[in-house]
Amino acid sequence: MTEDAAALDRALATATAVAHEAGAVMRERYLNRAPDGFAFKGRHDFITAVDGEIERLVAARLEAAFPQDGMIGEEGASRPGERLWIVDPIDGTANFARGIGHFCISIALLAGGRTVVGVIHDPMRGETFAARLGGGATLNGKPMAVSGIADMGRASIECGWSMREPVERYVDVVSKVMALGGGLYRCGSGALGMAYVAAGRIDGYCELHINAWDVLAGHLLVEEAGGRCNDFLAGEGLTKGNPILAATPALYDALSEASGVR
Ligand code: IPD
Image (cartoon, rainbow, N blue to C red; front, side, top):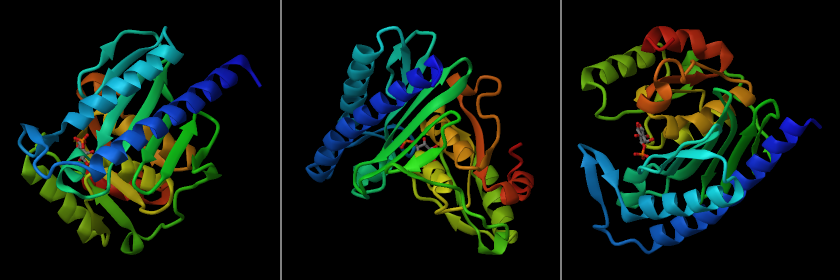
């Protein structure tokens, strides 16, 4: 094993342990949350006190394990470093806030301009999706792969949505995907949507704008599970977000045509 592979294995093991610790706190807070314990950062953009609490916990653990590394977190954590941890403490905050148990923590490590480690942990189902560059992708430690579905008429496609893009553009993509015969999902966690593509539970995930913390871990999971994604980090993707398209290789071109995401 090269030094690099050993370093990535250590990063993956640490990210997994941190995701599990944070997930246990998240689960406990979710089960005991106040029904009105949320606010809005913008239209349909939820925030809870738990988002910040989890981000601070993750930042402290990663800094202790890798003092040289930097971090970008959805809730404002920002530390420079050659390697960068990209963290969404709760992806699916709207679900968390409203009592729908479909959310996760997403942790990615960026080195040399690409994602090298990705971990997505769903504390309600006890599922951990993990990958390191060149090492394949796993679900709770077992290898996972994208589905073999090549017929859009049998495919399940999640089209993520936020107020960051005009509603008309979203409706246009949805209607084109459905005209191709795709079955539509919108479950409210982009990270879990990507993880489900990697696990072969759905066949594509598309969103016209998404942020790096929502999607980088899932991007690596999908590629390591044999799927295809657009170049999310192109341009200013890391700091300003970009469109995302992830799919089985057989469906990618048709979804790219329908969504305009290349
Ligand atoms: C959101 C979710 C949602 C996606 C949005 C994201 P958050 O992240 O991933 O599914 O459609 O684009 O902003 O706010 O729950 O961390």
